[in-house]
Image (cartoon, rainbow, N blue to C red; front, top):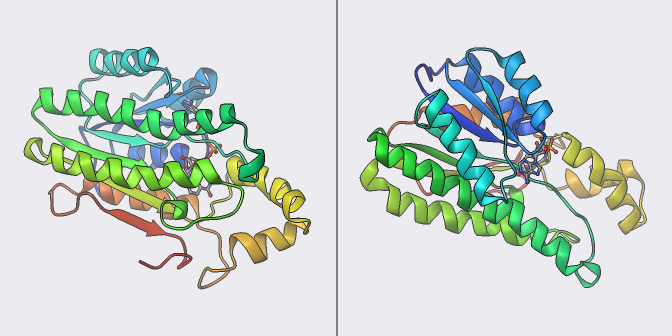
Length: 258
Ligand code: NAD
């Protein structure tokens, strides 16, 4: 296994799902992990399960003050961040014509503002430390394709590709790399919630949502797994040169083939 020994890794949305799986794999690889989440209690619980000096930090990624506070606590308690995974996210399903402006803004705030605020804070620490680092943004198959009822999610996930490319260009001189992971459907609480919601919107059964909507275009009818994404995040975190920067890795069982 790739070693992240001596590295400090901050993962947002790490109290659940994909973020938690990445945090666990980083801890197993020897990193000291900051479990940053809006759910402070769960972040603390996950950190204590991870061990290895992991800490839980309360962080709403849409709140500039909380992001700054979480990063400065990290630097004080553990040292400067070497790896950021900007992963926190939610999903709201609705036809565009019925989407409220408030929900649109909330989605963009979590996915886009969150990625900007955490990347900026991480870059500042990576530059000051002189060690550079790896910034990983959690995109989606929806960074490349569109689906009905997900207008702000698709728009924001496409936007992350642009942000990662700018970070790659501006960060290179300080040895900061930035890449986007684009998972297919992974059975986390975020996805379990939308199966009945999509069934309602489309007027089909939940089984049909899984077979004919979520997995229809994969090569093998399989969900992407937490391990698939954690392994990809481990590979990107440990990849030490600027050869691999500004890219998106699509991990979707062939749903989207670039
Ligand atoms: P999840 O619901 O299991 O976990 C999301 C975590 O983010 C939760 O712990 C939640 O408390 C936290 N969070 C929500 N809002 C936050 C905020 N404002 N600040 C800080 N933390 C916040 O979801 P997941 O499926 O693990 O999704 C994680 C990321 O992966 C998201 O960006 C999602 O868009 C992306 N993604 C998921 C899938 C999938 O199929 N599950 C596919 C592609 C991309």
